[in-house]
Image (cartoon, rainbow, N blue to C red):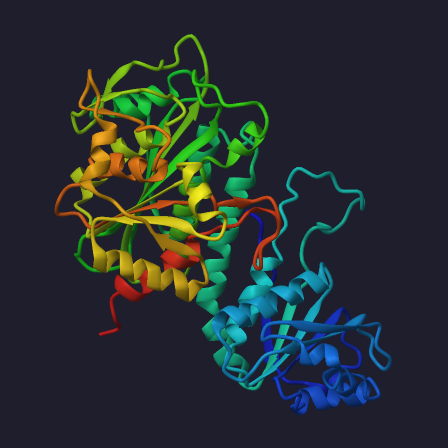
Length: 497
């Protein structure tokens, strides 16, 4: 797994600034008043910091933005960064500021003059998350020695470093979870096969997660025939992996269910060639579930959470399912397969039903790169949120807002069921072009028991991006790990007493 940069919290040592290498960052509020740390930096740079904050350029900055001074006189550092950030900024702006530092520093050491700022955890988290790079398949040109891709450490000078370190401990665990998700989603399908995916999930056992792998024989015995039908044209076996974190009491767990299609050709309903290489990310939902399980285990969350992922590959073959086939789900409902490229819902419906039958969860959230239609509706700014339970949906939306991860509630309704009626089976797997993301969610709702609070997250537009975002380079974003960790923290963790 790609390792986040090491973040060290240390007492403020102004005498060490002159010899500090890499990038030194100071924090200055809107009015331009220099604090103790910035004043020392200003003296060392012969007034350059003061001139910068009095400039028109600094006046045009918003909270979270930055000015940088290259190769400043009086310092060993190659750059000074001046962050515009008030004493009580929005956490999103503080993370944005940290991310700006990560882009500036590249692989150089970074020293942040944090003092007693209230948002040091968010600044450090932003710098950590934006410092990710997926280069596992790039050959080194630097010869032997240390890994040239390994990021240099981040040092945060703080008035109370022990308190800052304690506050950042959980954020570090979440960053590790985000990096795991990004690694999984970025991996090519010839590396991350269904078997390799299951093997990587077994490693969560090192953190105390109970991991169980159900093979095809067991899935057949359980009646997961819609899931198995998706993978029957592939040489790679299909699996369901169950991950259990028992950090709470005797209460029923929160369940997370992820779509894990390691590559999606569309099957017999073959996708166009252009852009098919992006379908390595069609296991994004499963990747997010894995990242959340890592995060909560690494920070020893006092909650019961179970994560289940259906791992399959959708390939065209003489054995592949065909349009017009009728398959029977674990629930017992029959499904007419109109389009084999609408395979994610066939995977999820069996895993969701199994989750409810086995664990009777307090709530269930499924995640999937399910439909291109959600991208048409919401672009790449928001995931689609569908739910049968208003309070549950509101809690997730609040957690996503806190984490700065875009999410937007979408409708469900009986009227959409009419679009899924089949002439030969209980239901069709697609309802046509209109309301494509909604009818997909409505299909899944059929496999949710009345007593189960449920959320469906369509993450097709946010799991992987062609260009960089505030907190991630181009490629996998790790969307959802921070939001779901926050949901678990706010709504499912037991108190100290």
